[in-house]
Image (cartoon, rainbow, N blue to C red; front, side, top):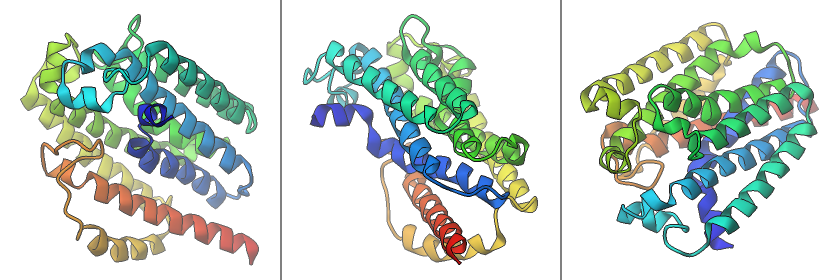
Length: 292
């Protein structure tokens, strides 16, 4: 059981899967929607979906990961603790659970969830392997691990998607940063595995430039969302309270638990913590307001 939990890499993705989904729902509530049990359904569905994405990734990459000692230790299939068939059986069961939970929300959210699951599979599946090609690696990664999570949380309660397009663009841009960061970190291993992703195509220097540009434009998108009052102004207070506490923690690894390659990697965990704290405070405020 421990090996199957490790295969989901839940510690890596829950810090962004849950808050992105909840954020979408909160923004829908700010436009008049009432949060109910669908929030639980869509959060659990996205947790299962992203776990499926990571499971398929490690299943399909097991042979490649065996080449790298660090990756082999992290991948229970490469380490020989579970078989490929066992892993796929559990992954498929998880995908069915996700679809069932999405179906408990509404048709639009089910469609978004199904799209996320399909991308999660095609991203790593050897017969397609979107992550092995330039552009498709970045687009599919940023959609399935950020943009679609936010949209599914929102559409569970509202169909007015125009209300979140700027914010969706922002989280996609930050996800693009994350993917480029990962590709730069795994540059040598990916080259040995024969991948032809965006970073290997454009080279390290250009990929570094694209990574930094993604951060800048992502920040601009968030500031624009603040300008259009997507976020309430009072959220600045939990941010200011959390920052000195969180940044007092000195990290040497990124969110994958691997040695950070630059300063942005060293603060990934802190940024995730701040985002989670702020969204938790906002969610609490929404529920308290509904009771008054």
